[in-house]
Image (cartoon, rainbow, N blue to C red; front, side, top):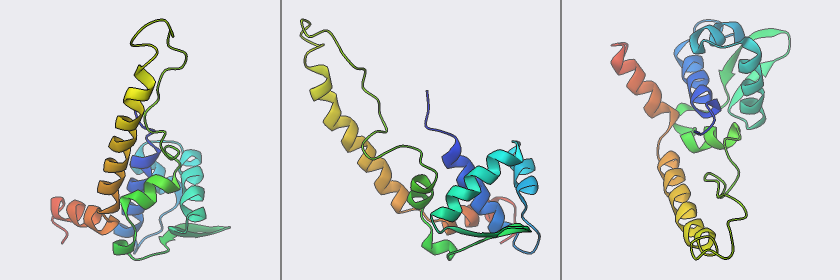
Length: 144
């Protein structure tokens, strides 16, 4: 099991919109880069639009960022694409056996640890911007 790939694909979409801002960034173009179906891209673009991260207009191919790169954090993308709900990154199995010493205590023992881990991860995401991602890609491609 892993976190939904919507998060990584959301970052991919936003970075490509920025790096292709001189061209037309259609859902087909984005889908070819992600190697997925354009319908998947359109669904994610709808989520990104609803969160105010991109602008798209019906009947007009392409999208553009609705904010500056430095104003979009990875946490914004994480929330926009509904990766997980608050305090639900980690699932805890339900109904462990109450007659077992571990079973009756495991949930109360690990829930606070899982909550702390999620908060720590989200703190990291709040401190990384789309600008950081795009600059790293540009450096790797020697297009600085």
